[in-house]
Amino acid sequence: MKGVAYILLAFAIAGHVAGYRLQEEDEYEPFVPFITGGTNAVLGQFASVVAVGLPAPPTNAFCGGVILNDNHVLTAAICVLTPQHTLLQNTAVTILSGALQLNFAGARIAISAMYVHPQYNPYTFENNLAVLRTSTNFFFPVVPVPSLDVATIYEEVMFDGQACQVVGWANGTASPLQQFINTPILNRDTCNTLAVNLGRVQDSMVCAGTTGTGPGVCASNQGTGLFCEGRLAGILVTGLGCGQANNPGIYAQLRYYLPWIREQFTRQDIPLAGSSPIPAL
Image 1 (cartoon, helix red, strand yellow):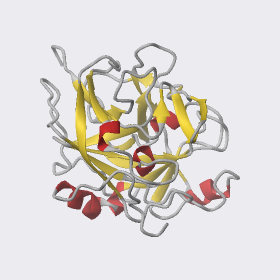
Image 2 (cartoon, one colour):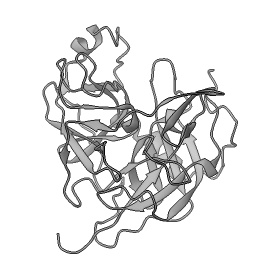
Image 3 (cartoon, helix red, strand yellow):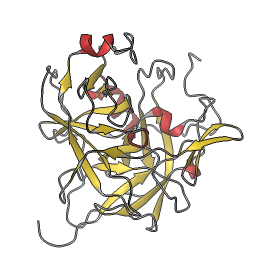
């Protein structure tokens, strides 16, 4: 593809300040890296994948996400909630323009509404999804805006050993590069026997990766996309071991959530900051 293509990168924050993640009211832990052992993506390969950060220029990103259409982004619910599981202010979530290399100094676009899945369980990571609506539309001079209505969602049942890719951002540079990892689908029973999981991987989730050490996802990519056969198949919800043994990534399978995702596109209400979007808690 010729010319310069600018990919808009949506950023969200969940209690994160200047490279540190908020744990309690006055307690911060050092920021964790992005992705390990990845391969540089090429222009347009994963145009819908986004990164997440602060309204002010941060030193790092916080979450990942995927653009669904011209003004909606899909990410993990945990990315837009406080440690007390209440909704962040819309002003704490902004959009950053950039290309394959993150541009922290770029222009930012506001978020107008955030919709968290009402059955999200922060203790088991089930239904860990949120749809973000932007105040202005995304704009791609060269790379087309992806759309949920043009076969960009993988709706088939994934099978053990299926070749998929997870996309993130390479750490260790001032402007991280978009990278991907080849990550095969891992048998659910095998994944559930791992000590880090202990049976928590439900039918609506899927494991991807291996039980050995190697390339892996890190906490800063929570909310990013799993792609199978070139289509978005899952959103990273946990398993953020940066390539540690016996800690593969775990993803929400989007084929279970398509009706709910589409419903968010036409919602007119604006959930209030500080409210709990999880009635069961």
